[in-house]
Structures are given as structure tokens and as C-alpha cells.
Length: 233
Image (cartoon, rainbow, N blue to C red):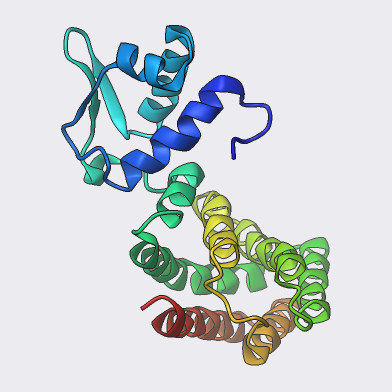
């Protein structure tokens, strides 16, 4: 389904993007915009707009008298939320989930320690509110409601760290958390121990206990990796 408001080029992207990231067009493949426009029944200008978006993600490059060439995977902007979403929708999902979760395990514990030192009173309150929201929706198969609070929790951890590089990873973490729910790589109800850990992280941040906040967050990410061993080996 196309994202509302993106129009015809969005419809093209929602088909062509996943096809590229799934390997249906291997690196080095030449895409002819005229042929693609005819295939998708859109104008050349719409097709060019879609190609420009793919170029911004480093999935393809355009060259005069050559056409649109699919770039090697090592050159893709793998941090682009849309690229992550497309990869999670394909056969590469287990690898992508594991790669992103390992990234989280390297970044989030450090961010939590910084947040315990630097978070404002408002950010501490927001983190606690998110954790309590997770508790409130952790039973009864309400994963989508739970996800809302889970994503918000981890965004606060990253943004309140005071490190702008960490903060920019908020969209990446949101995509992996959303992807796990969207593609049912989750238990029907969240692990109670993991929910408790989130509450304890919020408490550690409020208490300005950076060491404990970092350790508890590391336990969260380790648990997430262990879940993948079961659900997406």
C-alpha cells in the first residue's frame, strides 16, 4: 500500500524499492526509465521523481546514455528508515533484524547512561510515562498500543542523551521496533521481564544512576537478541 500523500511516484516506489532491496534487480542491473514508466503506467516525469528518491537512498545511480544502475548493497543508505522498512518486508528480514538489534545493543546502553546524567526533569517524566504506558498495554495482545509507548521510550533515551548522533538514530530504532510488530516477530504479549526492565531504566534515569541505567538497557538489548534466536533464527 502506498503512503498517503505521495501520489503516483509513491506507488512506483512501493513496488520498485522493495524489489531492489530484495535482490530482484541485482547490483549492476540497468533500469530503463521509459520501460519502467510504461510498466507502471505513469509519465516519465513521475518515473524520474521516483528515481530521484531511490538515488537519494543510494540504491541507484543515473548516468546519461547508460540509464539507471542498481548500486552495490555496500553503498546503500542502510540507515534510511524507508530502506529499513523495505528490507524488513523481504526475505532479508532475519539478517536485517539482527543487524539492527546489534546496532541497538552497541548504542542504546551508552545513550541510557548519558541520559541518566543529562536528562531534564521533563524528559525523566516523559520516560516514566512511556514505561508506564508499556506496562498498561503489555497484556491482552495489545502489541500495537504497546509499540507506541515502546518507540517513544527509546526515542527519549536517544534524544535525551545530549548526543545528536544518537538522537538521529531514533527513526532507525522506531523502524526495527515497528518491523518486529508488523511482521509478527514478537510474542503475543511482551516478555514481562523486559517490560520490568524498561520501568527500572526509567527509575535509574530519574535517580541519576548512569551505571545502572546503562546496565539495565544492555539487558534489554541482550533480551531482544535472544528473542530473535527463537522467533527469527
